[in-house]
Image 1 (tube, rainbow, N blue to C red):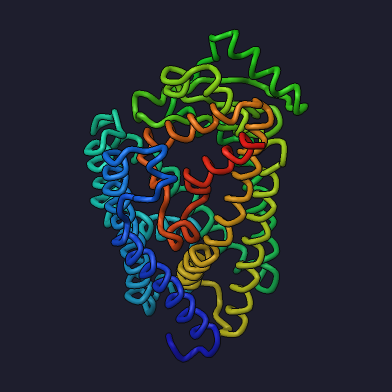
Image 2 (image 1 turned 90 degrees about the horizontal axis):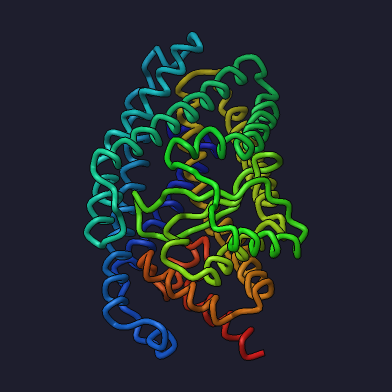
Amino acid sequence: MFNYGWPANTVIVLSILSMMMLAVLLFSALQIKPSKEVEVLKYFDGQFLEKAAAYNRISLLVSIAERFIYWTVMFCAVILLWKNLLINKKINFILAFFIFAAFLTIIYIVLLPLQYYRGFVLEHRFGLSNQGFGAWLGDVAKERAISLFIYALVMTVLYILIIYLPKNWWLAAAAIFIIFIIAANFLFPVLIDPLFYKFTPLDNKNLENKIFAMADKENIKIESMLVADASKKTNRINAYFTGIGKTKRIVIYDNLINKNTEEEVLAVIAHEMGHYKYRHIFISMLIGSASVALVLFILRLMQAHLNVSASVRLVLAMFIVFSFVSYIIMPLQNFISRQFEKQADRTAVELTADPKTAILVFKKLANTNLSNVNPPPPIKYIIYSHPPIIERIKSAETYLSN
């Protein structure tokens, strides 16, 4: 397997870079401690900082272990099956689908104990979850079933395209996946989200009118405004825009409404309107589509150099490479995401003209989510899709001083 020239060397380099990133995260996770900076202590007490540091340290360590085991299981499975005749030749598409599904099922089963610890035990230990074990397991089963079906289907489609379009399969695959990304933004809000939450119309007309008034300022058309019964699962607070076209809606966690003032709710929703104002969803779709097309093109070059015909093992190997590449470019994606969040924060303050409330919201977000408000730089740059809370507070303070 390792005598294939630059493709093999590329895989080795990708795997080494990915492991180096994990090692950096591991070292940084062990360094997570309560911040003692004056600016942090101005807003957060020592007890919270101790608790948040403990939660984030354990959670990140488990996440690192999950990622390492995920790659190890994938790599070992492909090595063990590499010479198996069933995956080394053209086979029936349906059989290929079930092989891919079995491959993913093994990975999910191996990772389940760590997922249980991080998603159930840890969340309950630190008071973040309200969900019973049966409900939690039901959600995990639904998530995994959806994920398994989508990934197995994607891999099967890739397999079919490589057979019928041996030279241009990557172009066809990119087109199909881009269409899927667009369709998912339409369909997930109405097909997938209701599997996990019950949605009801916002019944606070005064709050609704204020939200519509803010939306009118930015020429944002809202199709619907829904409340999700998130409190049955978590103590976290949140709101988000989802969908495009006729499925576009604002979703508000009931926790956000029940535990915050109207001004604080408006500040959170104004932030989400900032994302819409700057077309962050659309830009993210473009970036995601371009990334997928680029990676598929690289995979095509590797296949052409190896002169490997269509087979299940080829697609499994591509799946591993895609996983490494996706992880390596994550810091760049998160850097872009943090810029988006800064724009949305600025919009929220401008829309509400109330930076003091924005600061209160950031403090509540930190407390309800047990956020690491001032993480070590490597953690921020690699995995943070939002600026750390203390940075967001400082930005609001700057607006307040002006």
